Length: 189
Image (cartoon, rainbow, N blue to C red; front, side, top):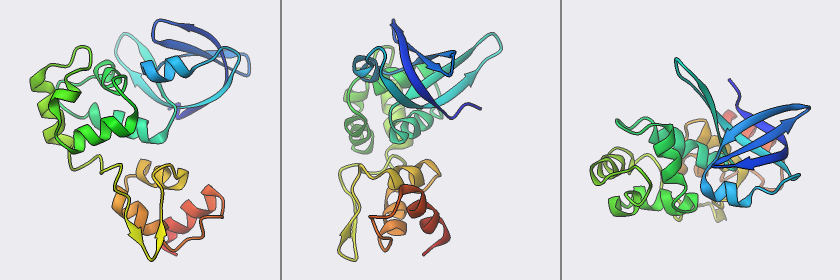
């Protein structure tokens, strides 16, 4: 499975970008927000989801682990495929989408192309307690873990809830590298 790509953007068209990774061009479908931010010849890193079907394979790309995690939750909902999930991620930044799902705001989710009212309601019903409240980051032992924290995103990508990831990082020195903080959080110290 292809989990991430790091390379240079060499082409953009429709809702895809092509990332050159050491001479190999990978076509990656991205949200409209990531597409707008993508500049030709810019070095980028995208987290990817490799979608394999009987007749085709597609790579979906995300500029953050948080966006990839929400995407993966969205495709678990009945009636939501990868393209509908990407359309949902295209309506606003990831924090706004997470807030809408957590707040059961189906009308906001229904703004996405190809997502009807019933599907939006099913999404908010199934996922409102799984996405975490992005603007509410617990304060533990006087250290605040910010929502932009790469270690926090990494733990959430591994299946931790926002609250559990924040607790796991609360007693770990924030000046350590992301890798070291994640390792210590996983070990429980």
